[in-house]
Length: 408
Image 1 (cartoon, rainbow, N blue to C red):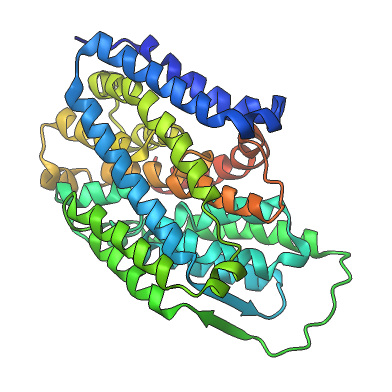
Image 2 (cartoon, helix red, strand yellow):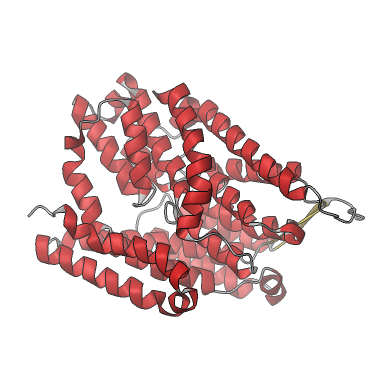
């Protein structure tokens, strides 16, 4: 039986809860968000099963959630055992360099791995002048836009790789768009950072600039997690969980203390995304059923529709839906699509990856970065504040330029 669009109401309520309850009563939300997420998740699942009797999709979504939380949780634990201190002045140019290097690294260890590895040292470096925009641009660049070059960078691109897109195909076809987009966003970041620095009476840095590093043992476990990404379920998740446990128990307590490590951020992400995964099943099923009827024929249309939906829905199945739609519209397999209309693949790939930065839930590491930053006492923008004050005025004009110059 076809699932109607109104079955997505629990998902809409989940988004509204994340957006509005912290503004209405933050203390109540911090205490009761598990009840809200679980209640809406049960409602969404019950409604979907009543309408469709489709246990297979529910089981598949449960496995996807297990894979998601295994990856993000293991990376959180393992990087919590790596202490990086960047000694030197936190100048705008140094901050921009760290963000650019984080974007490059995200193509090797994934946006989640790069985010978990670098957010703590980035916050420590800027301890004397922390502002919300530092976290926001970190999410924009390291947690999302950076990972557009390889299948390791972001989950939707890995699905494309499994479908038959060669490993280095995107590097060849989007590196200049990637570089252009990063340059624009970093340019806006430098404007913000120089303005924030103006008028500050910062003491001169008396020491010697350098990099202080502890936890080399955890790098082995980080490498194991990245390798495990290419293995099948459940071997993949078992290796990730084993790596996290080994790293946690082998890491000196002093490193965890210096990293201000606790399980609170991963607990919050796990519970909220449990509700999100459960409630978005009807929305994704509706998209899967009706994606072919949207009349998408141009790369620009694929870019905007894939991106817009990836801002709120899981970008991996959204990417796969429109990649399949593009192949079906032309009667081509993936190799034919790459040969005849490569710009469609570029548009779908960049839409799925870039637009993950539009909201806190657009990509897995976004909310994790926010939770870690909140632990430092920095008050990050609310769900709506993030969109209205940052992603809409900054990212949408950038994406418009990308569309006009490279995709339209």
